[in-house]
Image 1 (cartoon, rainbow, N blue to C red):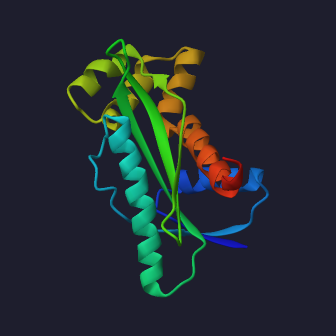
Image 2: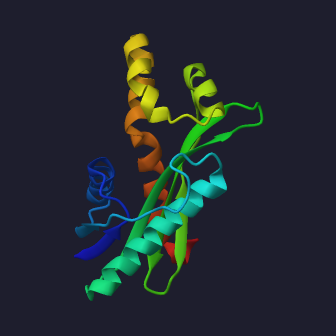
Length: 175
């Protein structure tokens, strides 16, 4: 059984990670760690988002190491936004894995264009989470609800990035 430190205490992110580990048929003891990303609360570039995921993974690894516990590796997950070539914001996620040799392996999710409702919110650097309920209440078509759930839970982005990072980590000899 693996021991994995994860740079979050978010039940949502922990559940997503458990789901992926189950898919991979990997048994692991997850150690949630409350750590800082050392980037803004709502990163607006890919570089800042990736750095946040690396910082979370590194700090979680160090935190567990300081306790004297053994850990196989750590994971950091960071969701962010960035403008595309059409000057529109897209949501995505970076997940990073840090091991005992300080190797860093990262995976990035696909991008998803944010609905027009959120474009001005992001341009003003207002926090998307503060407006999710408004969006969900005013957009009640089936597809709109699916989009709202994807943005609120961030599951497709976190799952995509985390799967990639773990595949790259476990199969590093292949990449």
